Image (cartoon, rainbow, N blue to C red; front, side):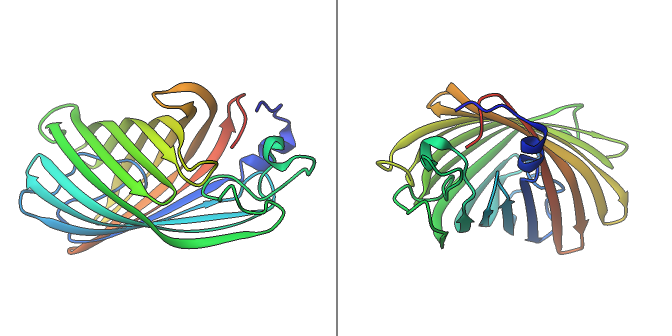
Length: 278
């Protein structure tokens, strides 16, 4: 669908908030960003536990709270190859959050959208939680940013879940400055998905994202920075038929102790493209 963006509508949509928290035991590698993967990998033979919690909040109207949690174990197969496994869980609460006339019909709002079963009565509130599924991950560091001006890596992650199956690939880039106090990082991600919560449970989608950020260690144990996401959705596999785009930006804060670290981050939706909103 297409939508004319008025000032009020833009302000309403820009209230869409994404927040994330990472918490990890061990200090072998740190995640200084909320969403951006870096090339700071686990050394060979090292294992790390990481817990991630994320909240997607607020849509065009009503109530929308989508919590996701990812419980992860990372392991360094070599100094340049890291593998990981995830258990993914979720909690979704929504009520009259959707304004798509194709879904809402004659009503100006209804309950619907991502992770909300299409069989649900759109005039009533929706709440559901559970184990979503699992993911596997591999990161291969081709060039180390500690020893080269620009680090390069490849990332692959298949996901199997109740709400979607996904295959995701990323090209990771990173540069370190000022004796590694300043880290600039980013990546390009391409993903093909099969959505299971709508229609016949086999709806294809794809995604192309660009993420970029900076983190600066301003004091012992403390870092802070900013990161941005440029998001593109497509209604078919392999990046065909773009249906929406959006831009997010926000700060991050990182603390690293001897045996654990934690990162908090927040993103604010600035704008969306002319293709409308899901």
